[in-house]
Length: 136
View 1 (cartoon, helix red, strand yellow):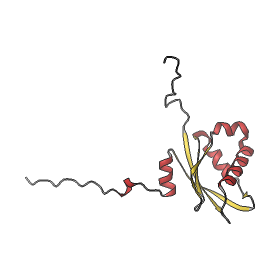
View 2 (view 1 turned 180 degrees about the horizontal axis):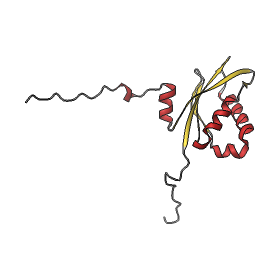
View 3 (view 1 turned 180 degrees about the vertical axis):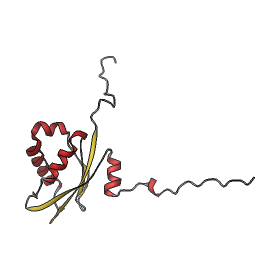
View 4 (view 1 turned 135 degrees about the vertical axis):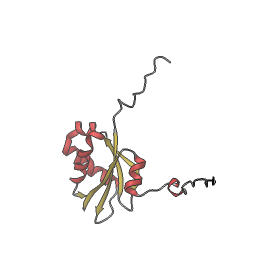
């Protein structure tokens, strides 16, 4: 038991940010094609070392095929580089595209609520009513 490594305390962990984006295009774009175009753009912008420090992760189950929206997780120090790499994408395959950053959030749940309009059951619960006051 004593040889187990300890987990990092929250103060020493890397801070994450979730960047919500939308792809405006002439035709629907495949998720894999977006990944390839983004990585090509990011590697040209910051290089391999910068890309590894950015700790990029595409949240694949957040990709909305119909609205062409998704989430990218990255390190908080590299948010502006990720935004710039997205903005530099002009074409994906034969389609001209306009990548649009909807916003940045600290949690995935907040990003989905603020930028994608997702709702949960908590949003539909009626507010608790106060008990009627008794007269004196």
